[in-house]
Image (tube, rainbow, N blue to C red; front, side, top):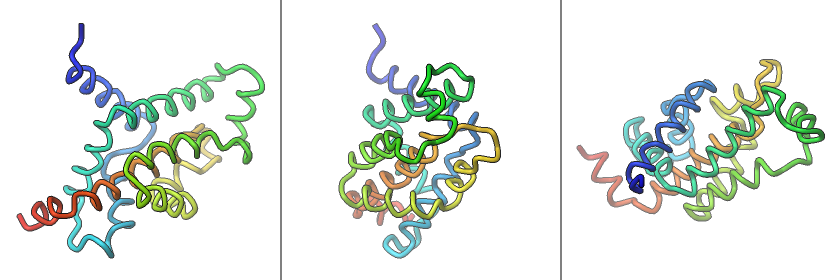
Amino acid sequence: MVSYEEQDKQYYNHIIRNLKSRGVELKDIAEIVIFLEKDYVKGLDEEVSIYAINKVLHKREAQNAIMTGIELDVLAEKGLLSSPMQRIMQTDESTYGIDENLAITLASLYGSVSVTNYGYVDKLKHGILGKLNDKSTGKINVFLDDLVGAIAAAACGWLAHNEMSVKKMLQK
């Protein structure tokens, strides 16, 4: 039987591999975190942002949401979904909304600050989110763009809920 810690490591590594294969690095997500938090966390840098992102990526509920969404994007890109789901994913149908619901669920793991940050960054399509949302690439990122925004937003929530620890990290 695999321990919880070993399973967490497997899930985390799987997510990191999948993010990279879809063109997303942790530094891209950190850039969004810094953009969102620059006025609230003085001196916030990439290292502390990635630390917060990793806290999110080790939370089981977040892992499950991320793995599910990426898997659906990959299956759709390979044309392996049945109709009408294949069409919905290929066209990123505007009324689908399940992608946003999954992202909001992930963001809500870290409170209202995360949910409001997610909505804001989803609307702006800041940084890597604009690239992921570009339909001209032929890539299907229906879930990924929302999940990346939610990861960044959740990391912002983690930073807010751990303010004293963050201040100590930034003083070093």
